[in-house]
Image (cartoon, rainbow, N blue to C red):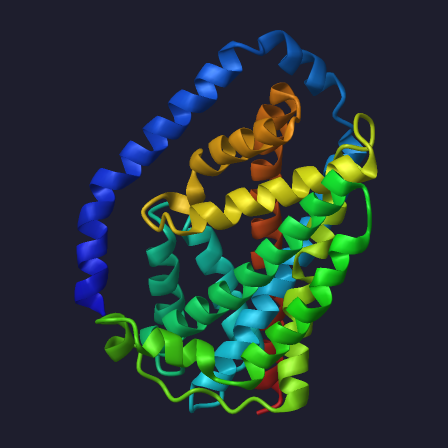
Length: 313
């Protein structure tokens, strides 16, 4: 595993700058042609909308953290305190902003040393990414279809998608799929956890509700300039851009690339370029602040738990 991560680190040094430079050139080109419109869009930002979005984004990230800690606890044989796993994962999400996503995994493995190994953590993240982003993409596409057709019928697609999500937790096919990936499967070989019906429902519920506060945050952020349906479409486009840049493990948190892709998708839908450029940056800052708040919250809770455990000894 360490050898594979080392090879990833070497080619990351070449691909990461290239991706960022291309994305930065695209954003700069779009920005140069819409400076006047951008100034007008800035005036439409309401501070209370930003505060509301920060709080809602923190809730979304906290749900992701809780899901990871719960799933990881099912993969490791030893007793793993959920708050300990949550705080390690939350801080690891901040670490990934600097050198890249891979190092967030290494940080979490170092913190949980003796309780969870790197293979279990990586497998948990892969399954979480596969199922969580699969649902998120379905949700985003449904929202965009609803905005395009101006009807609620596309949201009926979420019912079979939610059932499939529950079934994916109940049956171990995600783990088997990863196990069949050349090289990776052998390094991450773990017995699939036996999840009961209620456990599968609990994990599926976390993923189903994961992005809802985030989408609601867009309504508050764009309250002064766009309708609720348009705001949800903005949020859905941002989700698609976020998922697409997840494959760029060489780029720290999809730096600039996510904003460039969000602008491109939004332009194709018909949204103003100035709003896309502005809100792409604003939401990036909001999510960074939310990551910090989430890490602080779980670290404080874990510290209190350990202190209480020492006092009871």
